[in-house]
Amino acid sequence: MLVFFTDRDLGKLVMVGHAPHAELARGFVNTQARILRFVEQRTPPYIAKVYRPLTSDLEKNPAAPGRIELWWC
Image (cartoon, rainbow, N blue to C red; front, side, top):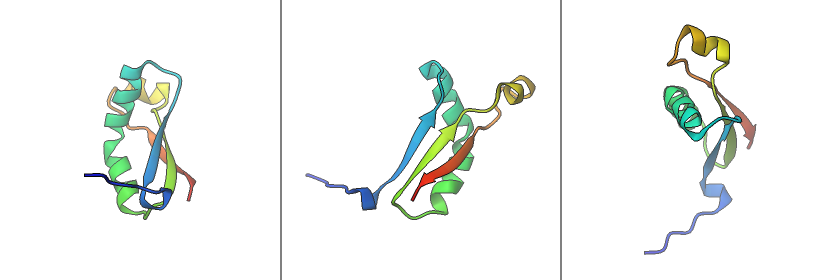
């Protein structure tokens, strides 16, 4: 089966940050609830940036979520 997607069909998330893949993945997982809420509130097409939490936030709470921002719609 062949499935074709166009830009009109997809919402895209871009993980932002200069960090090892494991840290980027942990930031993505910790931000999952915010990401799901963001995705549920929007209709594609869009591009959003997912940012890791600040170092100061991680020092207080290792499971601190990052933030997600709409970049293009």
